[in-house]
Length: 326
Ligand code: ADP
Image 1 (cartoon, rainbow, N blue to C red):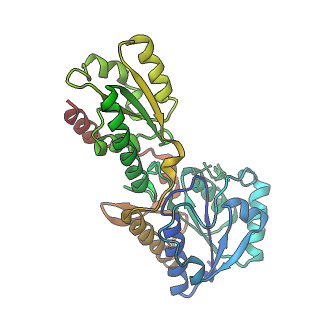
Image 2 (image 1 turned 90 degrees about the vertical axis):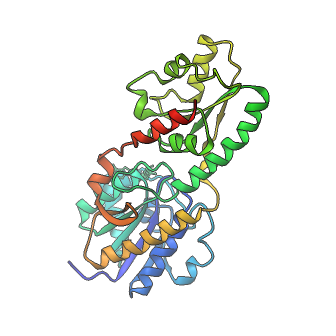
Image 3 (image 1 turned 180 degrees about the vertical axis):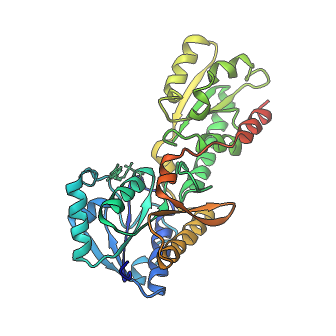
């Protein structure tokens, strides 16, 4: 394998708080180790359309505290076809880029894997998504900030839920994963979380109501993971209105609120560690791996595992929520 001299860096897919901290860490660790860095704008789109610039240490000054991504992010249809990836590779050659660091979620790492297999490009991925849905890492960059945002929002909704004695369904993001809903429910003292990992097995709503989840309470908050499996907050509210008209039901969909904001200390530190680890991995000759954290240690996860294996919910958390919401 030719010696790596120049590293290209991009953020792709859904943005997540802490991506900037990761950009900073990758750029500075790379320069510290004698590499050149090229910033690629708008994810794979910028690789295909040649939006590539030199990145120096100053390019990443004063960004660690900001949400979003200074490199911008995009979804790129062209990159899902071979011709688009060929164009991306040609632009890499044009800019003498020898390796890539890709910060993104499941889709972005799927693209990275495809690209690396076809063009023999060393790629290291960083898990950047608020959904926390990548296998092989306990946490993804952005998840902790989003979780804190969910908690902050639910605290406020509880004030009005309590005053009006209402049942609130609050829908949170997660793209078919219940991490934000379940941990958000525990952190905010919500009565229940309806998550896709369990929805397939039982009718969670019927169970909640049969168990008399409102017997000792005048108001209730149920967090719902957005997913066709759960039916979403709207779907559940519709059902309650029909089946249990005595309840005064309201819905709040937190939506893109959850994506923004200044990253928490935990996300900034995770992104800094993972960014440095990406450069260490390339120095060691690693390729086509995602950086993960497992029990607070940095680990390397082959792309195939990170993407294809689904990350399980810890059943003890489901039990804790159940016990604490009596
Ligand atoms: P995320 O990374 O947040 O999961 P997406 O699923 O939108 O976001 O994926 C981001 C981009 O990754 C897509 O717009 C596309 O360019 C690329 N991508 C996703 N899946 C593939 C694939 N199977 N082959 C090639 N590129 C892909």
